[in-house]
Length: 409
Image (cartoon, rainbow, N blue to C red; front, side):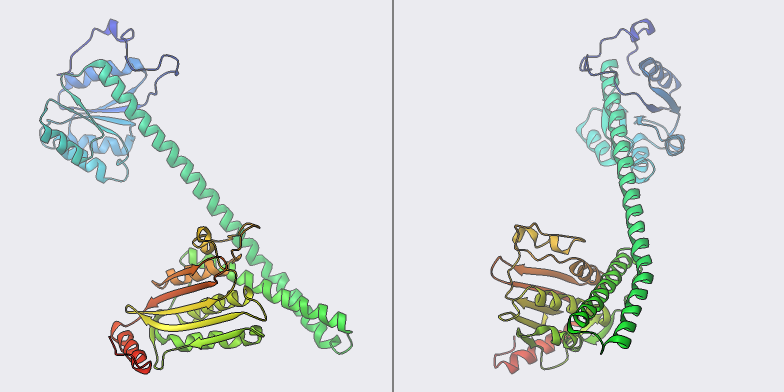
């Protein structure tokens, strides 16, 4: 039984530890769970004058139902109750997502260390030992209520941020999707101009027309990329994980980029036998195109060097795209995969736009991984890995070692 204080003393009772100039202490809804009616009445009489709304339950089952429907700010839970004891009730409260974040204060006359540990294992937030001291009760209830209110505030802010992010993404997706129609019309009219007036245009006008067509094509690619990123983030992009020859996928992706190579040196290194990978060949081909396209964009047209290597590694299939471009600062090597990442003007890091974001999302959707090894002035090596049949990958690795004249491991 808790110690009682005369009702006339309640409002004038000194609460050591309450800030005198910090405003009124927080109040909330407190659920009292005790099988003895006298204890429920006494605790309610103690808490109500201090602004708390008090509701009660006489057993564990009633407590679980009341906590779920009323969502109190704190629960004062007696340990020794017939049927379901306080430890069991606490465990069920903490395992229910609807009540897991409600602070539980165990009321107990058990002072043994093992009992306290059992309460902590059940998820109790605090303990009150009988006979209960009023200032101690009020301070602990105040702290529990404030903890609950702080959690509710954080949860509300998180939900608002999530809602705003969803609205922003939805608006962006809608705008990008609606841009396709006028862009298709503009591209069509430019194509008509080239067909009807191409031979009649002077050099300057023909150059402007070609640049306009290229710009419209680039914009169309960026729009498609944004829409694909949105679908990947929403889990709506169809991904077909099928066995395929990764070296063939890489070769098919690199070949259309040959006109962009110019005077750069490009070396393609593939294993002498097919390397089977498990993934979506279309998406992986686009990943390779993005990585090689980035390497082309960030290397010198005259002295640029790019190597593309396909190989097995630790039971997976791996592709490496290396260049001798300006390199990337260590601090930016993870951020470049973030959507809309832009390096500072002082930075040597490449501005990757959306391409690397697409690459990361496409590989995440196929249980793959992607990364970069780089340093300012030392070039960059982008790599990605996808699952591969372990036995076949080991066979390819052995064959590569044999071709190189080295003993197979």
